[in-house]
Image (cartoon, rainbow, N blue to C red; front, side, top):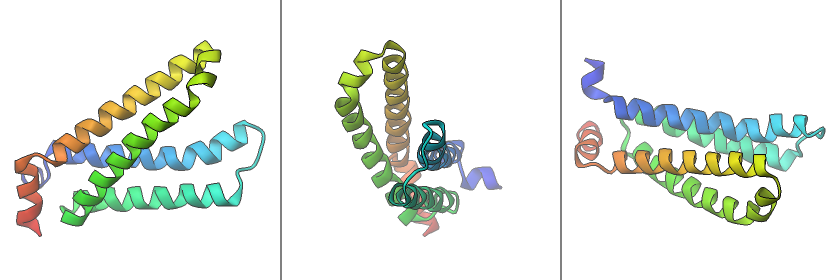
Length: 135
């Protein structure tokens, strides 16, 4: 039974990582094109690298690899921190434009809630045991 081995919460964490991977690639690529400029090579390569790491983490979670659980915890922590720093740095610009403020705050709140829930879920005793028993 696949559901006995991979609970719904684990599938949701993997989907979250997939969404973050697509966002990482999309913000630089699509955002650059919409802004009327080509993304520079360094940003595009960084975005591609982040996307690959997120995808590897998502697949590792689905395969119940302990290293993937740790990698996902580290990624959630880093993304959480970077989101908070990003809001703090962009706050003056966000306040100048009301639509941007609403969208920026909504994006930050969404990310913080999703990442905090994923971090909490992957640290639950039963989930840790699931990975330990598999490895």
